[in-house]
Image (cartoon, rainbow, N blue to C red):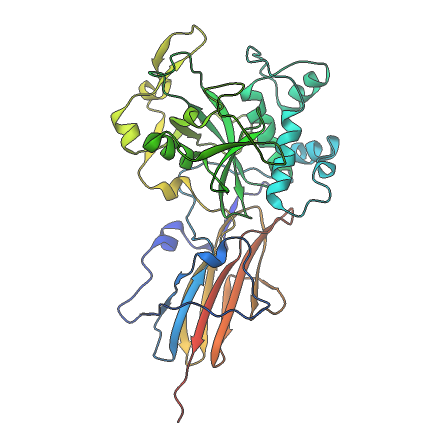
Length: 409
């Protein structure tokens, strides 16, 4: 049976996003004090915010939650299945596990997989072959070259086969400045390590960073529209070497190549290639509203992007609809007794296998039904939650910290 995204507890998206604070709620603003065994990965500890507890009484004196915030999947369509026969075949036939063997960093694994795609063929921007992923790779063995469309397709499949959530994008520079600038196809992959979408160009084996922070396509787009991407560097290969912006493929291989950025609404193009959904999600910002996207097609003539007349753009002013968060737990908490909390845990995890919890740095336990009774002790209490998909890829950890202080009789 084909797997689809799973919402733990069967909670509807609208309910997940509903307001959580009743007039009776208490919200405590305080930094948590973690025991040695409680160490959220990556940047999670830097994102501490108040935790809303329904019906909380005065015994709850501090309550915070840290880790990435949950954003529901509302616009994009479909989800890849890494256990699909095509995904299993790709992983086994091309020995993708060997590509990432020995790597403990998830992002380094992604970079090595991207480099593997890049190294399959030489670049041939005139190639118009329209075969599937396996046909592309077979022709590459025979010496054929390919372009961004093929790299986007193959990298999408490779990331899927290894259990990562991936999507396709179409980007372009400003044709008023670069009339010969062509449309370019790239991917974004959800990074559990960084708790964000990261842009990966499989054709040219690069991504963008600013101040050491790996960027999403939307971040690059906004920076370019704001100040031409000042401070952004182009980083190439698994070793993240900084390379010139105006190198091979300029301008569409530079940050200014993201003057326009759109997202294919379908996310399952590898395991469901017969789908006919062709709409494009686009951020409805001032750039979209006040300027017009022109593209060159096969006749080399600049025309308005086809999606205008086809009414195929899906504009959204809510960036969270673009930046939905695969695998991120959403905690809804209610106090049910003086030292007891009811925790309901929801998530949107493609191909969910389990949701795990642990308290106070103890052992991880599998949560079967999305409900947890959290017994508190006087002082500091910690609850960590994470998801795992069917290929044992762990999502980001979200941690709640609650300080209980009961009055003495």
